[in-house]
Each structure stands twice: as structure tokens, then as C-alpha cells.
Length: 296
Image 1 (tube, helix red, strand yellow):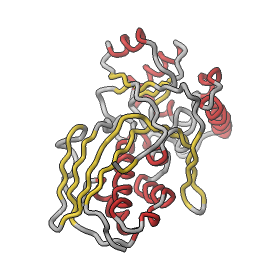
Image 2 (cartoon, helix red, strand yellow):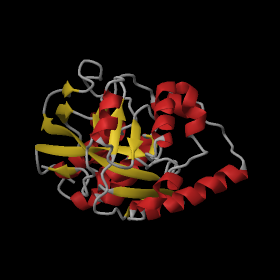
Image 3 (tube, one colour):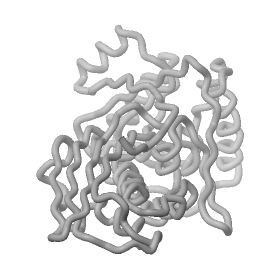
Image 4 (cartoon, one colour):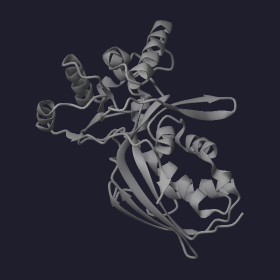
């Protein structure tokens, strides 16, 4: 295997995982894009970051995109080289919008673009590699495929399939100023839950697939959850309160991924947006790209 290009550019979208009840399985691509450029060089690896994370992220081999490129090249049996990495980050970090999954998918796709046999890094291989790095496929799947996705893992590894979305689907994302690390949000979850709570979420997840496909009258019931959001409330009290108030007002609001952003599975009206922005939240209407990460 050899490198056939010395430079590639990749765009990769933000994502929201869980969507309420679909813990570690459902995910949604969001039209907020990071763009990276990877250049193979003879010298040492360098990293330049603008936008989100500038000044805070590693600037060498420890950078997550670099690690993902390395994993992709190794999987393809391609030679390693020094890398010149330039990242323009727009996806908020530590907000439950899939910034780490985006970095991993971007690096793996860059490796595909560099090698002479890109089929060795097909979507199945990229999902498997991304899941190995991330620990689960719920964000990697929509970052890679776009739209809404369902992901699962069996003895053969991780898999993903697209979930149909109705044409007018237009989510809203509320982004707070504070960050929350994913491992912190996961640490508060119990190792086991009662059977009745698991059954509750199975039913709601099935309803949510129907609601996303067009049965919008199901959205409020379909976004109820008993597996993770209640346990995480104390770790993100402002988020939990925002979700509660929005749902009381009839909006299908959930925690975005591990939080602390809030995902509303409808387009909020202007009056509600104005009130939310008045309390310090940034409101995004990102749209849902039907395609995921791609070379440009």
C-alpha cells in the first residue's frame, strides 16, 4: 500500500447522540462543520488549530485527528509520514455535539483520501475504527453517514443504518457557556437499571423512529427517557432545568449527547428563542445534512 496523495481536505459535521431514549444507539448529524487539511511531509508532525479549542488542544502526535490518521494508515497497511495538520473548528467542544467523534472520523477519512486503495478504509472499516477509538458508535455513525442513524454492536463489530427523516425536520440546539466532559457525564450512570425502566426506553425508542419519519404527534412521548438524563441532572442542573421548562411548554427537548447542550427536535419559535438567549444560551438552527463527512 502506498500514499497516492500528499494532501487532502475533509469536512465533518457535528452530531447529537441518544436523542432522548435511544441511549448509545440513535444519533443525528447537525449542520455545523469542522474542516481539516492533512498534508504528508518528510519532517515532524505539526498542528495548527483555529476556532474552537485553539490554544487548548495538543499540537503534535497527541492530537486526536493525528491519532485517527495514524490508525487509518496502519489499518490500510500504508506507510506513516510526518503530518501537517490544519484544523478550522466550529463544533463546540465539551458540549455534547460530537466534537471528538468528528475529529476521529475526519482523521480516518483523511487517511482514506491519502492511500492508494481507499476501499481498504470503506465505511464499515471507518465505523469500526472510530468506535474503537471513541468507545461506542452513536456519534461516529451520523458523522460518517449524515442524517439520522441507528447504531448497534454485535459479535462482528459495530454497525449503523440510516433512520428515515421527514422532509420538514428542523431541530434546534441550545449551547450553554459551560463545558462538561463526556467521561464525567458517564461516571454518574448506574451499572444496572430496573427491567421496567429498560422496557420503558425500548418503547420510547421505537416511537422515536416513527416520529422522526413523520409521525410528529408522537414526539413528546417518543423523547421521554429513564436511562440516563435523570441520573445526569445534578451534573448539569441548568441543562436539566432548561429541558424541564421546554417540555412543560410542549417542546420535545432532550439532553444532546452527554450534555450540557440541549437538543429540541423541532424548530423553536422566535419568542422562545429570544427568552432562551436572554438567559445566556446560544441558539443554533443547524439543519440536518443528509450526507456526512466528505473529502473536498
